[in-house]
Length: 286
Length: 330
Image (tube, rainbow over all chains, first blue to last red; front, side, top):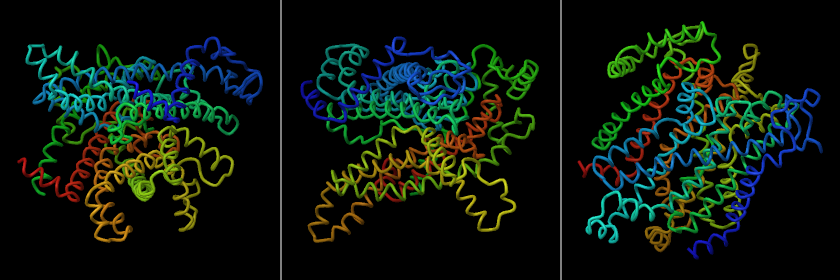
């Protein structure tokens, strides 16, 4: 553990990423205190005002304060990121443990399911599912989580395959521990490190997906302010209100970048061997 | 090789069935009566009509196994029904018009990504920690973190709005009919530059990183050492011995990243108003045009499956260990 912190603290980029991640979390938590304006209050006298001292990042086509809306948007982004990754990790851990521990038919079935889910281009599947559901922030979280568990499943399974041959696992099986106990108490705690990394890198991926959906107008429904929504509404007036298109995107970029840097840093610090996995779990837009 | 390909095809068959099953589940996603969909932006009249049409088209009043069987039969006949849009044209026809455009875009993107990612990856691996390598790493992280729709907006803002050099949307100018032969070609090309630039950006970042990683692993191998030891020029060692082996995983990753690339066309086509499958998908979600949505989902994922299969076969062709390993297991 001490090695972990030592390696991590030597990685300057990861530290910067970590600081920004904490800073963004603080902003999201303190949003009601920090936001200078009501994010949903329109003002007909201030339509599309450029950035100024009263409106730091300008106003939108309804005269709403963009800075306040972006602060509230950060809450949505982080909430969607954490909840959907939580859902994905839960499914991935359960399926991955079952597949890796039992092997045989169960393993074959779970892995074919993973292969199957990976055949669907994510955005097409998301759009098809969302077309049949009532849009809400919860639907978005659920749908992103339910279509994003394949990576964690593969990881957990791989860890289980190697761990279940180890002496301490075989020993506990021999003294009569139940399968559930062996999985839960002995194997899983040792398999969590790569899951943690995958989750850290999954959060920015979920944020990118959510903002992409919101940008298309199929994500979190208005009046919720989200970074994707602001971009979507801003693209109609891109010739006048450049600030509506530049700042929310910059916020997404900075958020995703810092989570990625932190995640990669944690991975390198946890286990240098994992470096071989390359950028496989790094968030990608699209 | 024959057995290897056969094995791959046999693995693909259950996946194909799985695609039909998952898409069947999607139809039944809505809680309660499957036709009680959210029909928010349709008038009550037309939403009642839509429900009627859905019930008829998908036989939603029959037991589930019967419904699934009918769904399978219809898919086997490539019968996706008719669009709910006012034109009421067959879904297959609508998708058929757009499929070539999306395919063309994706093929061009893939070619560009490979063309640039391989040399970038090789250069940054052979000069690890050099200035070029560091610049590549920065580019990779930016590529991963930049939302493609935002990047598209910025490019439109710069090249279409401010500079006016490139068109912001569509595939052809309104005056296309009246342009001369060469101007037509330039017009078409200029419409492609921005969308393809956006679509290749993220992929290029990913692939140069994989290429670098793969190259770094290969150059540590013993056979590279012995190639050097027998006095081959570094150019030959890297360009021939190392590159060939480092390219192998790239073929697999190419297959694996196809869904991501194709999925990306949803956003790119919507922003740049390119009449491909991605744009059709978004439009039909807004119009609640369920037959088109389902048709799109099934066709896109089946195409991805086929492309994956081709990547697998290509992998078997370039790597004898894979195809012989498969045979031994038979």
